[in-house]
Image (tube, rainbow, N blue to C red):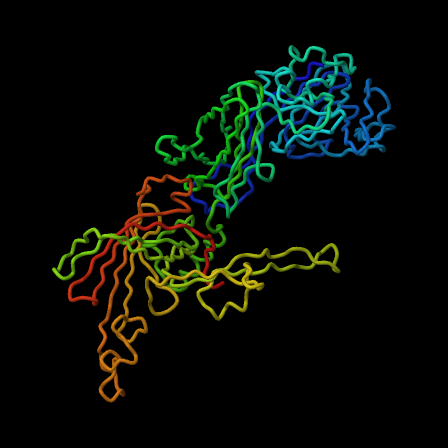
Amino acid sequence: MNTSASFKPRWLGVMLLGLVLLPGFLAAATIQQTIELRPGWNAIFVEVQPEVDRIEQVFAGLPVASVWRWIPDDRPVAFIQDPDEDMLTIDGWFGYFPDDRPESILTNLFTITANQAYLVRLQGSQNRELVIEGRPIARPQRWRSNDFQFTGFHVDPANEPTFYNWFINSPAHQSGPIYRLDSDGQWTEVTQPTLETIRSGEAYWIYTDGRSSHQGPMPVELEFGDRVEFGRGLSRDTVMLRNRSGLNSQIRIRPLPSDTPVPLAVQRNDPVTQEIFWPRIEDEYTLNLGVDDGQLMSLGVVRANLFTREASQIFEFNNGLGARRFLEVRASALGPDTETVNLARARAATQGRDLSTRNTDPRYAGLWVGVASVDHVSEAQQGGVVPLPTEREFPMRILMHVDAAGTVRLLKEVIQMWSPGEEEPDPDNPDFTRPGTPGRYVLLTDDSLIPNYEGFIMRGGQAAGNRISTAAYDFEGQDLEMSGQFGLGGAVFGTIVIEPNFPTNPFFHRYHPDHDNLDAQFLNFKKEAYEVTRDLELLFSVEDPEGLDRPEWGDEELAGTYTEAISGLHRSTIFVSGIFRMRRVTDVPILNQ
């Protein structure tokens, strides 16, 4: 059999320009697998999951007489020497017949699936090309013990490996027979595995002697799922790469072209300094593995360089020794969708709020939690205005929320709760319901709203919300609106005024006659505590001030310089400064809803 297969990168979706305000869509990068079919029987191996998996669509325009798949049960394989035998009478074989054939009524195979082998009978007298567009599915190869398996392999068509090299690390496959379909449509044994090569897109009968978990000379293993997916709650993931080729191997990782590229970084450790850095995978990334070596790759999505709501890209892994795998990587942007942004801006306009001086990039919407480490303080006793280094850092927790309209609020406390989804009547069956409004997380600063929602973490056997608070500052009300631009290169600032009668005024003492703000008769107000004013400013750096350069930088992680001027504690204003770092813990864009 002279079956060949080639791949071309393909992608779906529309190139989106600008910010993530554009309508969301589910991007799906795809590749094309091309398999050459000849008249008569063909044993093929499909490596991608077709976009449309119906057999009549996959083989549209091709004169196929039938398509067969072996779906084994617990019984041994009924090996077929000649495919022309009546496979309908043999348990385990499922077939498809086009509608114009009399056997079509017997069809019991309806779809084409990735990583599966098929027998295809082509009519006519000319070779034809089968082009399948789809996405790769990362699933491990499963072997039947002491039995045959009808399967193919993910190999590089430009560097096809021999059967011997492919199974060099698998004792269960070194002595068992291998059969391939010849040009006459007959199964013939591979008698020279050290010379005969595995062809891309071709399927074989492989015997497994005992048990085996062999995944070829370059296993690519995921912890779960069939692709790497950076959802809204995940910014890092791992991929396990192993070298089972019997030789030192250099694995090349190459991103294929995509209209919605996923900016991906990989964690590396300097063996001398133990420094951690995150190089980007741009044109190509190489990884050297020794014999029987393996490495757990930590991957991170650089969302600051992600400008579409949903992105998808396919990455090629090639060991240069004949093994090649494709892996799909998907990433979702954080921040609200277009409808939420427009609603928030319309609401702000009706309230007469001016958004011209505020950040309007919705990528930063959500709850941000961080720490400002104060390490410089001015010498107030000497009237100093320049903060000087302190012996130790003083950490202060900071809570900020950015809504979809760009309003930045300083929070004292926030509670994360869960709003359960709602069901709606099924229009096709009035006696049943179907999922309607999906559940979502909510952020509350108003405690009176807590009974309206549900907890999502267990404490003492009961569901509870997640409360986040700080003791670093206090003010009247639930939040303090800030001014300025939130995000890389911007700055936000605000003023906290602590009135003499405010409960947390450091000079106010309700039960001390000299500090209770009452006259000698304890009847009328008499100012005895001083008003304290705190002017805060957070200046966001464009580059990470600590040089960490993590994938989350610029989107899920921000840092910069913190400064504060405190008036009222001393006759001279006290100036402090330090470094702050903040992380986005959720992208919920609205408070108390």
